[in-house]
Length: 239
Image (cartoon, rainbow, N blue to C red; front, top):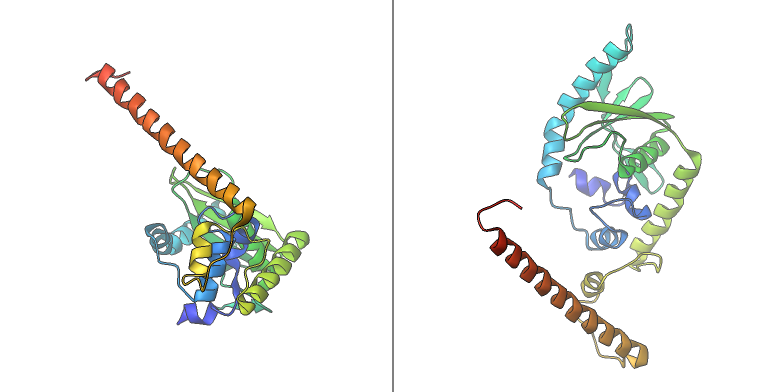
């Protein structure tokens, strides 16, 4: 399958994850999925994007032609996966020598999101393209686009960091620079072989954890009480 074909590579769409710019996935999440070989479950947002992609691409072609009167540029589907060492990219479309990446979002934004910019920088690195159009439809249902130029410094950072990441995946060792949460550690070591003495620092962390957890519960209860009193005070009236 296509997912198996891409599995040995670091995908361009994940580039932002390594720089903390992906709101939906952390580097630790990505590392675990690579090591475990799991496939990210398709969400409704992903399905929306897939269904609307060709329509938005066609719309972009029309609007671009209107804005650039006399243009003979044609938006054509990209048919190949492009590989550069450990990196792989599957662009959406080409228009001449420029890439075209289609996005949809439930947010309202008049600038391309950071994760999209990282993605097209990685795509340009793999394909050799010098420019890429990011085309998106947001919550306003208006089409917008921005032309992104290849940035050598950003591309070098993507290549270097993703290489270190994939080397760590091969060794099944999570690098120290990847910030992990308790759930990641539990997933990495589901069956602890023995126990260790936590030491003074460990005991301090345990105490702090329960202190914060107790405080959070207290504030949640206080907030709920205030909310209930406000609703009781308002009755059937707006406040």
